[in-house]
Structure formats: structure tokens, C-alpha cells
Length: 379
Picture: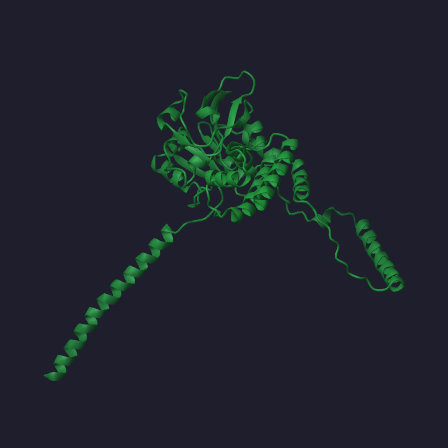
């Protein structure tokens, strides 16, 4: 009787513990799956897969839930295969478009265009009817136009945005003080926006940002989301650089190396061992920046050069100002103005303004950034 009772008790305990263990396994599995599905997915600016603050995963998801067919195009080949009449091609990461052939291929495709914060080269190739006309004031802005997409959205926070105007007398619709313009040409609607902050994951919740992003990108039943994260149009096509060197050049280089080695041995024995001596040479930061800026001239990449200069300057100044890397532009401008005694509007234009329009403007921007950094360091 006792053995039977003990055996039954053990079976009952094991049966209860088995359900507890099974429940724990299910809970752990669900928690692991939830963590994997909801974990942030980093990516580049305007990347439709990125859930970071500068990505666009949220607006792409909203468009798909609204019935819009969104085609994510990481390269020009995908854009060409998906393009068709009645399609909207949204070009959002234009700093990766440096090759004229890629821009020409984009311009030849059918469908409407949505250019977000375009570089000068992209704007000239895909929206030749508009010119840049400075920048709009930082902060919220009302539509002040009759464009339906803008009037339905209301006030929008663009952040630092370029301002556009008509190139000549061509009729365009201008909204938000020129931050948003639209025109029709050859049966195609072209929309140009000076900033993409309102479309990012971190900017959708401000004022009418989400509404404007949905209205602009959802005008067509099909949109191609083209935000390349790597340079487009450059390929080695499987050719090694050594294949471009004539065979005679290799033999000449070998002979020169042998001759240099013999001369070094001859002179080294006559003059004795080399003596290392530290040379107090000081190279100004502005000279280095100017030299780097000239490297961008050959590709007309003043946008990328200005962005690199401003980013490097801010990275060096933020620790001196006691600010974190995630500080917003108004806080940075206010801190720099307090340290330097300059006008905040002038500092905002220098640190976060539009790209320079000429090589001379780029050099002047580099010098001005150097002056601001030196004043912050000495204050």
C-alpha cells in the first residue's frame, strides 16, 4: 500500500512539473521570437529597412498598409526593371549618385519623380526646371500654397532644408517657403523637397510630417523607393589594374628598383647611418581641408565635401561644448553662439546650411568652420 502511494505521488509530481517546464519553454521561445522581430535594424540614411531614427522603415510600412505597392530598389538595375508608366520613382539618398551615366539612366525612365534633399548634380539632371535659392528658416512651416498634398498635411517640421525657385519663367508650385516645389513637364510630375527629415522614423510624429510623407509618396499606386547606400555607377568589371600596365613597364620598374637599391647602398656607406631628427612642422587644419576639398572638385561633389567638413567639425566641437552626439541642431547652434558670441542664424547657416554652389564657396565654408572651431577651443 505504501509503495503504491509513493509511486502515484511521484507520477503526479512529474506530470505537474512537465507542464510547468513546457510552459517555460513556450514563454522563452515567444520572448526570443518577439525580441528578434522587434529589435532595431540599423541601416543608412533613408534606408527602407532601417528602424533607426534616420531610416524610413515606418513610412514604407504605412504606405504598404495603405495599399501602395512599394518596391525597394537598392541599385539602378532594380529601378530600371521595376519602372513603368504611372509609377512614382522616389530618389532619397542622392549623395551616392555621382556618376552622370546613372543620372542619365534615371532621367530616361518613365513615371513621376520625387526628389528628397537632392544634390546639385541630381537636381540638375532630374529636375532641371528648378534652382536652389538658399535655405528656409529652421522650425515649423505652413504650406501657404494650394497643393492638395500640402494643405491636407498642414504645418510640417522640415529642419534644415534647402529652398528652391523656378529656373527662369517656368511655372512651378511652391509650398512651405520653397522647401517643397512641384511642376509638370512632358507629361511627368516632378516634386522636389529640400529635406528628408520629415520622412524619417524619428521625424514622422512631429506636426503634419507623417501626413505630408504619405501624401507625397502615396500619390501613385506603385512607388519605387530608391535610396542607394553605396556609390552607384562604379565597377571594376572584373578587370585587374595590372592588366592595364604594358609588359615593358613592369621590366622598367624592376630595373629602377634595382638601381635605387644600389645607389642607396653606395650613398649609405659613404655618408654613414641616417640620423632621425624630429622636425617641428605645423600644418594648419584649413590647408588640409582645402586640399581635401580640391579632391572632390573633379567629381563636382561639393555636397559630399561640405557634409564631410561639417560632420568632422561637429564631432570635434561637441565634446568641448558638453553635448552628446545625438544633440539636435538648435541646441548645438545655441551652445556655439554662447561660446563664440556670434549670431545664431549665421552659425546655423554655416553648420547646417545648404551645400555650397561653387568651389570658392566650398573653400570659404572650410575656412569659416575652421574659425568657429578655433573660437570654441579658445573660449
